[in-house]
Structure formats: structure tokens, C-alpha cells
Amino acid sequence: MFAIFKRELRSFYTTPIGFVFSGIVILLMNVGFYVMNVSVNESDVKPLFNLLLIGLAFIVPILTMRLLSEDKKLKTDQLLLTAPITVTDVVMGKFLAALAVFVISLVGTFLIPLVLAIYSVSEPWAIVGNYFAIISAASCFIAIGLFISSLTESQLVASILSWAVLIGMLFIDMVVATSEILIFKVIIGWVSVFSRFSNFTYGLFDLSSIVYYLSVTLIFIFLTVRMVDKRRYA
Image (cartoon, rainbow, N blue to C red; front, side, top):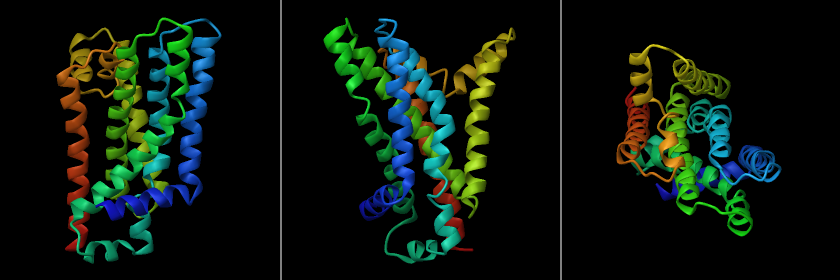
């Protein structure tokens, strides 16, 4: 698994994908921080991380579209499937590499809590909660994108399908939030990646939300393993 992880992480930064993704995350967060916090003398970073969460629905497909579809197109997946490693190792290596790119991108935003600590009355646990929440949500999005990448050999198709799913989830969540029908709000609120995000932004580490994010991530990783394993015996 570690060999796959190193190979994929290296490939992200030997192509423009890793730099483009990291650049968008860093630019979005730092410009957003200036507009939402510095320019109005506001220490609350919850809207900033909500902005990044919405942004992830648009940019995560850039990160995941090539993870498995490229191997299928170039037929290098046959080499991976016949190597002395398990399918789970292959999938987990690719997932962790994509997640590592996101975490590396967040390093470029660490100036934000530093500025807050120096110049304002910051809430340390709220800041930690926001970072924990955004990493948890990103892991769900990456797992979904990875699964979709396993369904096709076209990077373009994988990216379009991932955008459709992630942006669709966001759109449904926004529509239901304004709905007057209580049952819809309860159901969507329970299954929504976005609505569960808010608990952490206040520094509240809700166990049910942690289990939810972990469960969604593991379910899509499991589905990806099954899809790749199915191809092995096809």
C-alpha cells in the first residue's frame, strides 16, 4: 500500500494536477480569509470553512478523476492487479495519496489560525473543529470520486459524474434547507455531508457525525474495492 501511496503522491506533483488543486485551495482560503475576516475585523472562521466545503464539491473531481480511470485507459491496471498486493492496498494507497494532497494544501492555510491567535480573541477548539471537519468531509468526497473513477476509463466522464454527484448533493441540501416540509429536512439532515459539518465548526466533536463521515468514506472505499476486484476476475 505504501508503494502505491508514494507512486500516486509523486504523480500528483509531477503533473499540474496537484499544484492546481493546492493553488485553488490556498487561494480560496486566504482570499476568503481577507474578505470575510480581516477586512471586516471578524474572528469567526465558520463561514470561511463553509466556503471551502462548497468549493470542494467543485474541485475534488479534479483530484480524483484520474485515480483509477487512467490506469484502465492505459491498461496499467493489469500490472497492479497481478502484482503481489491486494486490491484493498491499491485502492487505499490511491485514496490516501489524494487525501494527502488535500492535507498538504491545508498547510498553506495555517497562516489563518496564526493571525487569529495574534490579533484576535480566537477559539482554539472551534478552529481545530473546522480543520477536522473539512478533512472529514474531504475524505468522503474523495472516496466518492474514487469510486466513480473506478466505473469508467475516461477521466472526463469520471470528472463530470463526480461533479454531478457532489454538486447535486449540495443543491439538494440547499433546497431542503429552505423547504417547509419537516420530514424532508429531518431525512436530508441526517444523511447530508454538509449539514453534519456545522457541528464541528463550533468545536463540538459529535460522535454520531464522526461515525457518519467514517462510515460514508469506508462504504465507498469498499464499493471501489469490489469494482476493481470484479475487473480482476472479468
